[in-house]
Amino acid sequence: MEKRTHDTRWTVCTALMAAVVIVLANTPLGMIQLPIIKATTVHIPVILGAILLGPLAGGILGLVFGICSVVSNTMAPTLLSFAFSPFMSTTGIAGAIKALWIAVGCRVMIGVVAGWAWILLRRIHLNLNIALPLVGFIGSMANTILVMGSINVLLASQYAAVRNVAASAVFDLIMGTIIASGIPEAIAAAILVFALGRILIPVLPRIGVPLRV
Image 1 (cartoon, rainbow, N blue to C red):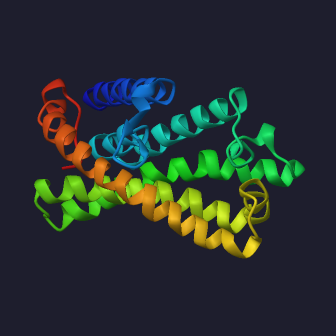
Image 2 (cartoon, rainbow, N blue to C red; image 1 turned 30 degrees about the vertical axis):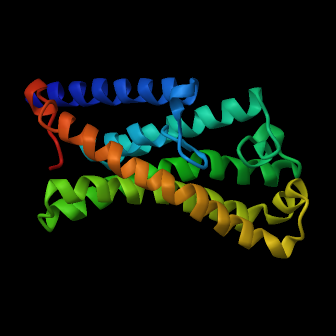
C-alpha cells in the first residue's frame, strides 16, 4: 500500500514537472537573455526532475521536451527545423529518423545522464552545494553536445547548405555554437539547478515522495 502511494505521488510530481516543461517550451519563459545570446531554460525542469525523482523521470521529462521541440519546429519552422522535425526532413525517411533522434532521443538522454550523474555524485557523498550545480552543468552540456554533435555526424551536409558554408566548415561552426551558446547555458543551468534544488529537496519528502539524495 505504501509503495503504491509513493508511486502515485512520484507520478503526480513527474506530471507536474512535465507541465512546467510544456509551459517553458511554449512561452518566452523558456529563454533567458544573456549578454550575447539567449539561453534556453526548458531543460532545467528535466535536470531537476532527474535529480529529485530519478533517471526514469528525467527520461520521461526529456521525452516531453523532445515532443515539444518537434511540435514547435513543425508548426513554426526555421532554417534548422529539418534537424528537429521529421515532418520537415529534406532527405525522406532516413532524415526523419535522424531528426527524431536529435529532437527527442537527445532530450531523453538529458534526463538519463543528469539522473545517473546525480546518483554517482551522491554515492561518493559529494556535498549538495557542489553536486547540484555540477549536475546542472553536466545535464545542460549533455543537451548541447548531443544535439550539436548529432547534427554534425548525421546532418552535416544539410547544415552546411542552410548555413551556406562548405561541409568542411561544419565542425568549426558546431564547436563555435557549443562554446558561445552551450557553455553560457550550462553556467545558467548550474545556477538555476542549485537555487531551485536547494528549495525543492527539503520539500518533496514532506509530501511523501522519496528522493535520491
